[in-house]
Length: 146
Image 1 (cartoon, one colour):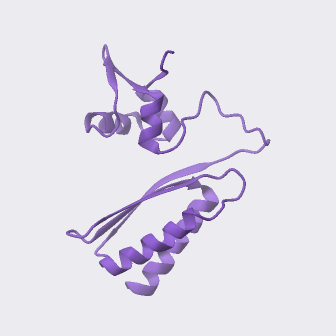
Image 2 (spheres, helix red, strand yellow):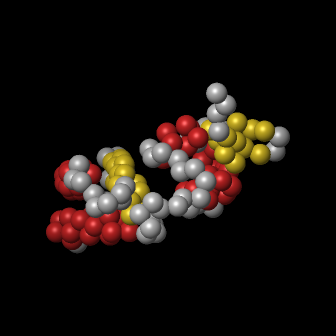
């Protein structure tokens, strides 16, 4: 069975990123790729592992007849205490286990660097889900760190 290979341009289009960002991910070793001539090729399985989501094929045609928008965001919070970072992580962790409306996907990844007092949250969700997550983060941050 032949493995589908995607160009850096294809990956950039699918993720809504600039092609230079995708190339930087490849050069940094975060996104595995092979070099074919002067271009990179990324295996579909590697893209799925990188994003944590199945890669879409071709042009998406929603079966339900409605358009779907997805947001990819990185929220970085500096000077956050370990206790507050735990509160944010616990709250957002409980949200990811809740059922979502329709086919809206929600993917969160949280990384806390205690030495730098920095919390990084990667969010991939629909418009409403992203707004909900931002609201929850704001609520916790507003209550604890002003």
